[in-house]
Image (cartoon, rainbow, N blue to C red; front, side):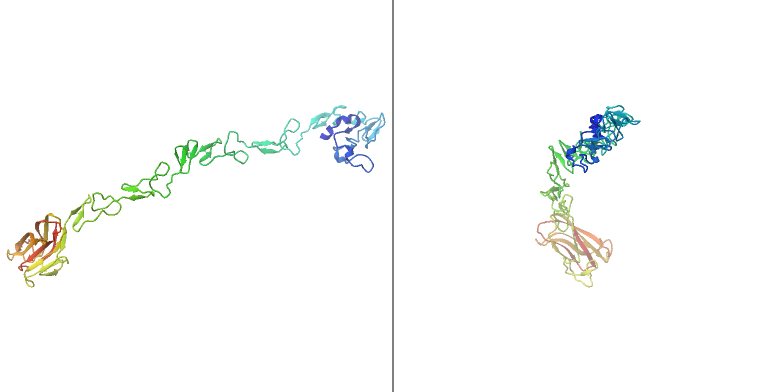
Length: 423
């Protein structure tokens, strides 16, 4: 149809169509004519020389190329005749149907334009959409179905998606991709297609992943393997408990708190020191004398008479003679000052007489001096075979003096001594 329209002017007189390949470009036919295969012309037309002609109506090529009708005759349905049959009109010697002929549409010489067909004697535009899905159809409309979803139409009439990124720097572009340049670390794409800080804004930066903003710069604290000390970003990796300090490696170390203390806990699970036997540690970390106890039957005590019995040391009139029932232990642990030695003893008979049964004394062995002494009579015991305490007060010299606590037995009664306690 488009090829036909290119040469409709020639049809008015000779029934040919121009604008097709020249006949000289085609090899001669077997009958010697210059026509080529009909396939080079629109349907219903035949190439005759340089033109495509309708052999049914062309007066110059009526029924065949170069078969011209004599003067005064018309070409009617491929034959020369004196007139056209009913339904056809003589237009310059060509019998044509004014209802369908595109060179004579409705009247002789009325040519339809490009992309038009003659329908019922009128030129009608026929959309040119073969192989096209969008764009102009040649008739003032567009080829169906058109592009959807933001896609644009290429020049060849095919749809292509046009990214929708105006005013956007991230997020979907509407074509399965994303709008450039996208968001960098710490930034996320907001609903409006703009990058937003998902962490901590820091000037033009966004701190994330544990970073902190320091002087307009994102800094990552260096606290791996550290529990205290500076984090490299102006902050701290942590603080140590009271009494602990942070070393160069970032570890909390305990500093023993022993200043002014000689004993007791050092605050780090250890001790500031221990006190000697008989001494205890007070709340201030100072050793204070609490007392010493010497068991009569222990190896630290000496005996001239008697024997170990039950929980103590005893002597009786039947088996023993007069002498020291107890002496020792030559201790240097009694601090200087006013002290009391308590002797714990029992008797078998407290009513036979009022004789002195034992003599108690505190003896400074270093200077061979008796610091204090007292005698105990039978009737001073309040009961029999029951332990009773007897105290001897003295002033201890302290220092390196060796003290002993003695009981001299007079062989008048059964006596058992349990222990001596010094406070």
